[in-house]
Image 1 (spheres, rainbow, N blue to C red):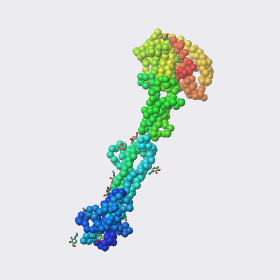
Image 2 (cartoon, helix red, strand yellow):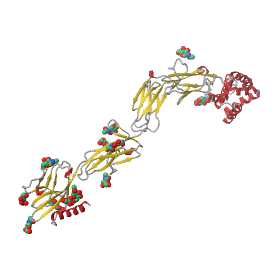
Image 3 (cartoon, protein in one colour):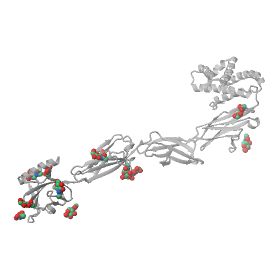
Image 4 (cartoon, helix red, strand yellow):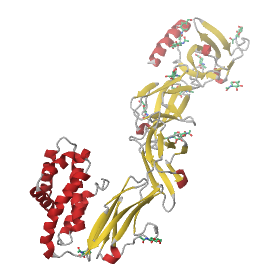
Length: 534
Ligand SMILES: *[C@@H]1O[C@H](CO)[C@@H](O)[C@H](O)[C@H]1NC(C)=O
Ligand SMILES: *[C@@H]1O[C@H](CO)[C@@H](O)[C@H](O)[C@H]1NC(C)=O
Ligand SMILES: *[C@@H]1O[C@H](CO)[C@@H](O)[C@H](O)[C@H]1NC(C)=O
Ligand SMILES: *[C@@H]1O[C@H](CO)[C@@H](O)[C@H](O)[C@H]1NC(C)=O
Ligand SMILES: *[C@@H]1O[C@H](CO)[C@@H](O)[C@H](O)[C@H]1NC(C)=O
Ligand SMILES: *[C@@H]1O[C@H](CO)[C@@H](O)[C@H](O)[C@H]1NC(C)=O
Ligand SMILES: *[C@@H]1O[C@H](CO)[C@@H](O)[C@H](O)[C@H]1NC(C)=O
Ligand SMILES: *[C@@H]1O[C@H](CO)[C@@H](O)[C@H](O)[C@H]1NC(C)=O
Ligand SMILES: *[C@@H]1O[C@H](CO)[C@@H](O)[C@H](O)[C@H]1NC(C)=O
Ligand SMILES: *[C@@H]1O[C@H](CO)[C@@H](O)[C@H](O)[C@H]1NC(C)=O
Ligand SMILES: *[C@@H]1O[C@H](CO)[C@@H](O)[C@H](O)[C@H]1NC(C)=O
Ligand SMILES: *[C@@H]1O[C@H](CO)[C@@H](O)[C@H](O)[C@H]1NC(C)=O
């Protein structure tokens, strides 16, 4: 494009100045601002004739000549070998068209178009990131929108290019954006890297680059998790706050609640407390803060609690038989260690597993199975003791060891049972709180002895057999107590069974061995009624 245009202009100039004399093709020379430039008088290496340089503005202006009697118009201009024009310290005004006239056998004209390039000297890069780190590195939140723009002044206007180099790839895979500004709508992890804006002067080839590192950050996706555990082998408590999945790692601040006294501040999220800093019920709060996370941070609370215990107050074992005592710990944080003792004042003499004692621990419950019960050795109190850093609790279980029952006495037993049952129910009526069991109580009050028999029978069946029967029994009570909530209803029912069994235990000297199963089953059902007024 430029060449054809220059040719036409040259022909025009030639016609104007020389009236048809031959002329070389015009050339373009590029100089940089404040630099020197040399314009050649045509592409000729032969000896030159008289060379005169003109500036071809509105009309040709004489600059200098090889005729020494004609002085240059400015000292910046000088002639070099072969008639070339040397211009020092270019200014933007020097841009223009120059003609060289050579007079030999014939007069020839040569056109040179001098273009003066300037810059780019500096680049202004603007990245609308989320923020800057203390060391100046920019970061953007994942999913956010980031605008990039690049500005530079140059003569003529530069060509601006953006390059991107990802962290994960060592080689440049420049997305080669030949625009000065662009927007990334959804920042993602693979857009983390170095963004380079380069501005290039197409005339001079001069290039400037600015590289900006942009990190892409994201907060953890879920809430932090607090936990407390005993440091291995020490009496210290380790608080742990986990808040994973973010980049970079968050910061954790542990404080005491209430009061906000600072326990520690770290990137790990763990703090170690000694026993003196702990007490039952004390709470510790962890606040996780992430550079692009929610402003107030995300928190969790851990409460230090001493153990609570539930067990059966009494158990029975037949001589030579087996019995299992269970103990359930709840609420302990950090988790409690559970021991079985015969004597609370001798905690060091905890029962150790042996052929006689089988101890199993499952999470926060412990069972003690005594094999081959003997009255002399095994009857008495057993203590389940649970202990953690903030408390010790113990619950006692009375184990009575009975002689195996005589089958022949069963008939007599049943008779006494019936009488007993009557007595028990009367006792129950008096004993139970009317608030809890009024309805059930009043039903029993109205029943005759035949009903009582049914009651005892049904217990045996339901305990030995299936749950269907039990449901029937529940329904029975439900019908009579339908205005009450479900839970108290069941408590009432089982509490009742418990009563019956307890008294049966105390008096069933003549019952068969088969009743042992019944008792054990009942015990299981009672496990949560222990707290009742027994
Ligand atoms: C320009 O030319 C002058 C004289 O020839 C010389 O002294 C000067 O160093 C040159 N400047 C540059 C930038 O080359
Ligand atoms: C003159 O120009 C021709 C073609 O344009 C080129 O081949 C030649 O090398 C040039 N001679 C000089 C001395 O620049
Ligand atoms: C040279 O100057 C003349 C006027 O003196 C003008 O008409 C012509 O266009 C100029 N040539 C160029 C190439 O600028
Ligand atoms: C050089 O310039 C002078 C003064 O203008 C002139 O008299 C003389 O003829 C010129 N010499 C040549 C070779 O053109
Ligand atoms: C010099 O000449 C070219 C054509 O050859 C033209 O495009 C350009 O504008 C001219 N420069 C000036 C400063 O007149
Ligand atoms: C000048 O012209 C003459 C005759 O036309 C010729 O003999 C001579 O070689 C030419 N000189 C140059 C330098 O072209
Ligand atoms: C950079 O961005 C800010 C905010 O968008 C704007 O105010 C400022 O003018 C921009 N600067 C450049 C050089 O683009
Ligand atoms: C600035 O700090 C961040 C995070 O520590 C790091 O990834 C980055 O390389 C640092 N940048 C510079 C230029 O030191
Ligand atoms: C980005 O640039 C910084 C500083 O120039 C360099 O340390 C870092 O390795 C670069 N990152 C990539 C992905 O090239
Ligand atoms: C960038 O684009 C230009 C033209 O579109 C191309 O010539 C060049 O090779 C590209 N560069 C890269 C690194 O892809
Ligand atoms: C008691 O347990 C032992 C060991 O599990 C078992 O061999 C034995 O039969 C059990 N005795 C009774 C009466 O269940
Ligand atoms: C418990 O141990 C203490 C101290 O050894 C002792 O005095 C006490 O009699 C023991 N109690 C029972 C029930 O064994």
